[in-house]
Length: 158
Image (cartoon, rainbow, N blue to C red; front, top):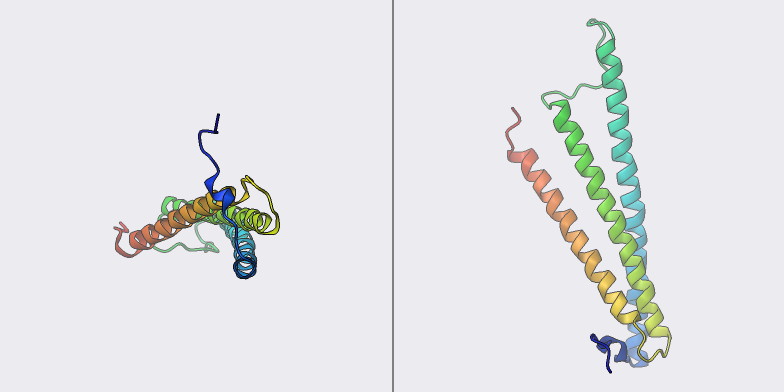
């Protein structure tokens, strides 16, 4: 009895010229994924650090006397709005991090498929699934950033 979802993509074979071309693309895809991992990690921890430092300084300045100027002035932005925006930035950075991990996984799976003569191997299917999920997460990040920019540009600050 055949499996319910036959691995049709696993039977795709590439000529040596196509495989050589794909190897170059796979390396770039892996490099981009690693850069996304670094950027997502830095963005996530950076946003969390800014939230923590701002909260600590805000709490400290609230306990000081009224004559002392605070180290950070948020201007017309309410503290809750600032913390929400930074939490959203941390969340979007975490999505970039996960997308980068999936992109590295996709490149490794595609490289495994190109290197081996695995008949019925699921490497190509898993590569496409990881790539599709990575692209979906990237679309969510871009949508979130666009929404945040729209909200900052046209939102009611009062």
